Length: 119
Image 1 (tube, rainbow, N blue to C red):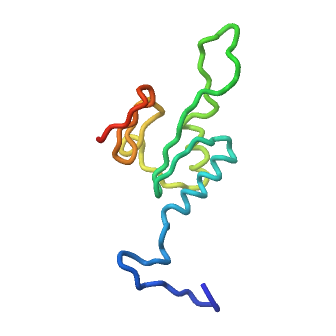
Image 2 (tube, one colour; image 1 turned 90 degrees about the horizontal axis):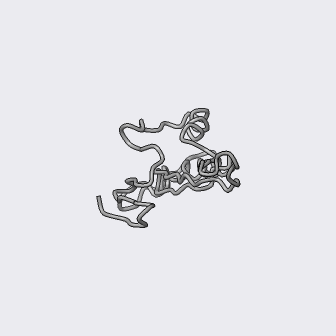
């Protein structure tokens, strides 16, 4: 916007140059919000987000020494984004609960095996 008018760059090969990163910018804002809410482990490719579920660093309990504790769950993430009106795909159609093997940007990622495969 300049001098009370909106000008569109229209001389580009594939799209409006003024619309570049139109999906990535809101995703960047979401990542900043997640970091403020103590959800730091988020990767982004344009508007696809990947959340890592890492065990917290709290010492184990004497009564339950093998119990793994996480600082957030998928419900925590959805509670934040529901307040903002973020239009997520249903987990059943595009997404998954936290797990050690996942598909992201058409690669199969195995965190346990430290491997990446083509889907």
